[in-house]
Every structure is written in structure tokens, then in C-alpha cells.
Image (cartoon, rainbow, N blue to C red; front, side, top):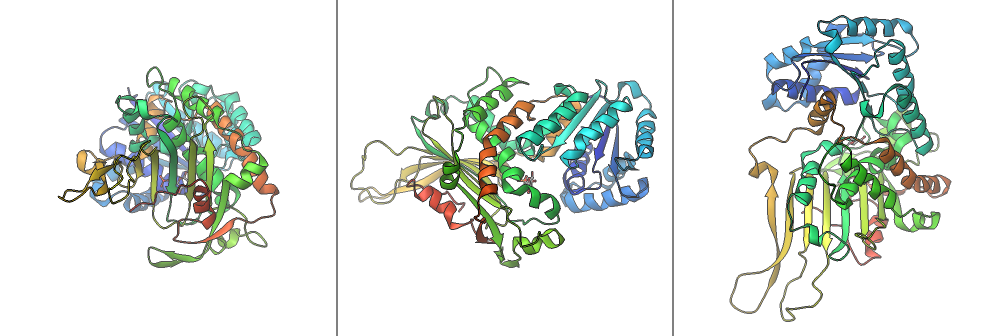
Length: 493
Ligand code: BG6
């Protein structure tokens, strides 16, 4: 149940995430009447902006990032009326006192839920939480939201988690992974566990391998300062892709609720086979985009995109990763999970493909056409939906001709309801205090533990990431990773 009054404070309130995602998501909830009636939104940043200046920036962002057909000027004005801006430098007590005064100065102050969204660098998470505690703002009504990546590696993530954990209880901490808020990702749980026909097939007995792809056409954009220290492994794979892997591979929980889904995901992360340095050389591929053509338009290479952030001698940061993982348990022994993600690829799409084994015996020796069915595609975005590829007989008199056809579920055509953006769902879960779709500390640490040897081996290697032209499906080595196993990536049509 939603509370009736809420103060939503965003540290990094003028940043890319706030403007592109958080404020449009809050607008959408307001539009649908789902925002607690008495909600204030307080943007905190180092910009010297007063409330009106901030409102003007947010108005422009809403016009840019909300779908035009959903823009209702009355609601825009209502949302802008909820906004405040505070100029705050982490080391300057003055700004903190202003924040304290603002949060205290409202009707129903003692019943108000306080959300503190940390859309800033992880090194500031701990100090920010300490200041909130010093000011008496970290009581049981407070919730803190942390954006990924949590830390830079296992050790720094522990430091961040310790620092935040010194102030807030685990149940007040919401580590966001927006992939978990996507409709199609939540539907994966429902499809797996509300239907009986998939479960008997969902194991090494019938599954040949699983592919998980998150491909983007965008480059690094204006986020070079952050991205060049993160790279695709920390930015996407350690969190989003491993979370998807967990949802595909986890055991059925007793019911879908607060802790038990997270317990099951944790077991998957702990069952990932650790990679030795020799495995890292063999089973992982790093790439970096060079200049190329994206959607028919020329696109610059990564170093050029970095602009002022390019390190001397050029960057060695990966913008693409592909790897082969294995889940060492009874269900999945021997089944490869191929994961890949990259920027500036040919098409934007995120998809999970479960490839089933071929029939054990060839029943149609005289048939023409390929047996290429036996795949379940779970389309995370865009065009959310599911396709089951089956091999069918092409109608016609003479002989049997096989043809792969698909049983299609398209969200857009099946459901009249619009699919809300992931942040809309997740932000309301924070306000409601429901942590099911957030990463627990032990999950984040298990994920770092697994990626650590990969990052370390790459860091020690003299090899640079393999170059791929913008607008392609990554370096050739990524295709070769599967070809060696007699398989290939499923590219979208
Ligand atoms: C973010 C990454 O977590 O996810 C970005 O930091 C990336 O680099 C984004 O572009 C992709 O999200 P989506 O929802 O567009 O797939």
C-alpha cells in the first residue's frame, strides 16, 4: 500500500539519470494518479539553481523524454510544483542544514516516507549517508536507493555496503538494477512458474544452451568520465546480464516474495563456475568500438567519443563483452550460458534465447529444409514479447518440406495496457518498501566475486580490447567463441 506523503530526495538531481529516467518516471506515476498525493521531489546537486531554475530544466527534460502523447501540461505543472532544488556541496555544512530544514518543514512530517536516491558516484554514498544520520534523517521512515555499479570491485563494493550499512538497515537499502523492473523480465518469472509445460524442459536434459544479449546502438555519449572507468563488464554484465541469467537459471522459490526470489538468485550466482586466468583468455572476449556506420549514419570511434576524457595513449576500456559461463548445479551441469553486451552495435535489442536440443533421432530423412526450431526467444526490449520457434511442415502436396515458424506473443498487440518504464515500477516499490526486485548485498558481492578474476586477468593482460566497427555485432572473436562449440549467436531478423 502506498503511503500518503513522501519526500523524494535525489542526490545528483540535475544529472543524466534524474533527467532522463527518474523525473519522467515520477511524472508518469503522477499522470496515472499513483504518486502519493502529498509528494515533494527535492533535487540536490552542486548547480547554483533556485527552485524556478530547476523547474525550467525539468520541464525541458519532460518534454524531451516523456512520450509526446503522454504529456499533459496540467500534470507537468503539478509535478513542477512538487519540485525544489538545493545546491549542496558534500563538504559544506550549510547545504545540509538547508536540506534538513526543508525536510522538516512540511505538514505530516512525522508520517512522511523519506526516499534518498543516490544518483551519484559510489564513493559519495557512505559520506552522504553519514550526513543524513548526523542530521537525524536516517530513521526507520527513510529509504536509500543506490544505483549500480555498487563499487568498482568486490573490495570497494564491500566498503560502500559497509558504509551505507552502518547507517541504514538492509531492509531500508534498495540497490536498483533497472532490468529487474522491466515488464518482460518480470514476465519471465511468471512464464516460468505460472505454467507447467516449461519446467520439465528447463534443464540440461533438454536445453542445449542459453544466450543472453543486451545490444545497444548508442555510444558512450556524454558519460565518458564515468564509463571509461567502468567499461561494459562493470556497467552492464556484472549486474543486468547476471541478473537475467539468475532469473533464467534459478530454482522455483516457494512463492514469489521478498526474500525467497533473492535467495534463489544468490544460489545461482554462487554456483557460477569460477574462471581461471586460462579460462578468461579462452572464454571471454573484450571489444571496443571504432568508427563505423550506425543506422546508416557515420559514427565516431570510442576514443573520439570520449573527448576530454580520453586517457593518454588511448583508452583500453571495453565497450563490448562476450563470455561463456556455466552454472554448476544439478539442473544446469554442462549447459553453456553465453552472455554478450555492447555499445554501438548494429541493432538495439535485449533478448534471452533458450535453445533446446535437437531431436535425438532424425525422423524425416527425406525432408528438405532445415530443422532450426526448438528455441524460445524472450524479447526484453524493444517489442517485448516471446517467440517459440518450432519446426513445421510447409503446406503442399509432394514430400515434406520443413520450415521454422514462430508462435508469437507480442506485448504491444496482446495487451492494451502500456508497458511502464522499469523505473516507474521500481520507484513505487521503494516508496512502498518492497525490496523483491532489488539486489541484496550478498547478491552484489557474489556477482563481484565471479567477475573479479575476469577483470584482474584483463587488467594484467598486454592485449588491448579487440576493435569492432560501430554498427556491427562486435568483434569476430565473439562469433568465434560460439563457433568453436558448434553454435552461433541468434541475431534478430
Ligand atoms: C545502464 C547503463 O545501467 O543501462 C547504460 O549504465 C546503459 O550504459 C543502460 O545504456 C541500458 O539500459 P536499457 O534499459 O536502455 O537497456
